[in-house]
Length: 372
Image (cartoon, rainbow, N blue to C red):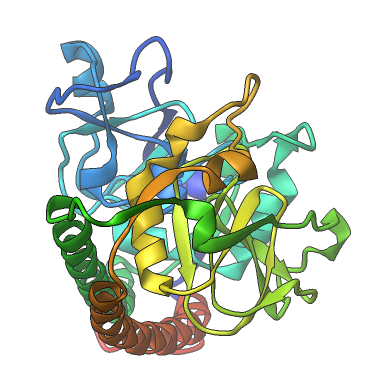
């Protein structure tokens, strides 16, 4: 510990800069340009590279703003302020101006630096420096660079990062396995109910199969970082609280703001669904409904003028083919088996995350040492 020293983030970064203007210099386009653009929602939703949007940039901008191995990306504005991502390899992608890119200097091991952004100290720091309006917080680079870091010798930094990375690698493997399993179920859905749809199937509406309602607004003072229950919005988890509003299996999607994401809660657990969501309770065929909604491309139901909006009535009135019970029940059983494995993996992920989160502050403070 005697060789450890306190420093500021600004002391150990080679550069810190925001990205390209999202409208003028790195717009999202509908064609495959070979170059993608990382945006806040990609970071906050942990989207895989394949799901980032394509963009068109000139050669000079691409050279300056290309994402390179060991870059650290941090969201600087909006509800996702402070959310972070580590770039593990060079990518054919740039980033836009909703994000800050940090590049470590020779004094700090990049992955060790990144793990400092997973600490509770970092979370408290972000909350303390977030300025802007109440609806649109933002963060200045200068303020971010004042974050305090405890810096051990370089070899010890590497050893600490390797311990934590070994846990993250196991987590990533399980996450990847879950994505593969869900893709398998989705492929089965498309094959049975889209590609091999039968002419004799009856035509009905989505409302024939589900009940639809809106979530409920949660007062700001009821948000609690140490709360027992998740608060869920159009992009997934947005916080915690000690209040709850639902305790059952259900599906939810964005009602206002962000449209198109579909989320599954396939076990009875207490949660709060915000008023930015639509809550879907299948009358039967739980997994069939989930994949049917993914296939809907809900963003096409947008009727909002100032911001995207989906109406309950429009969702319920979507015309669908109603397959025979026999084939849907077969699909439900196969999906149930797949999601059972996914749930088992999620429990392992939670155990590993708890272990990492227990070790992280002890390693970063020097309370627990590692062999170099």
